[in-house]
Length: 244
Image (cartoon, one colour):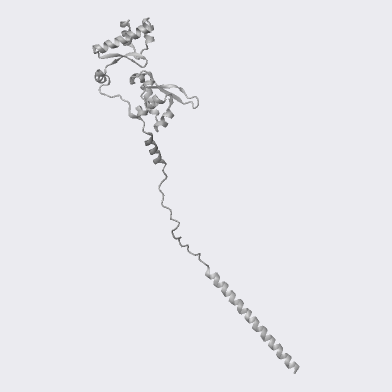
């Protein structure tokens, strides 16, 4: 059975669950799991350039950490095929928020992530996971290849985010600084002397005209009075002569 398991593991390109290999060799899952653990221990004891690990819900051969630089040099020929910082941040959002839409990832990161998401899908780290029932937007999740590359059994092995988050005091101080009103000029005190308000300009021409009209009226009244007195004198004189 051990030789059969080794042969199967040599041709697989993804981690194989114990149940799958048990069906292939026709043995109980308990026997297969025990044989795999024994093989892994033997490879480690012998110091082979590879080891047998259980990752992503299955077993697979991996090169040892000590031999990784040589394998990387051979496969990449001196070129580093690493993810950019933007891709790593987007992948982290998907890993912790999955299933999640591209719009949601963009809102969390504050930038457009369409190109980055296409890169992650092409790398086999992210895959489609249906659509949202309300918005009909395509949802994304991480793949088993992501777990394999991260060396995790499941998403439960993701590290907690709390130790890497800022303290609440720092967040409150930052929010308070953002909500403070802008500085304004100080208002004048109530005891300050009020400013002098200039008197409205008057139309002296109209006032002079009114005064002139008033004087003309007075002169007319005086002339009328003097004429009346003169007429009375004439009548008196005429009466005296007639009486005489």
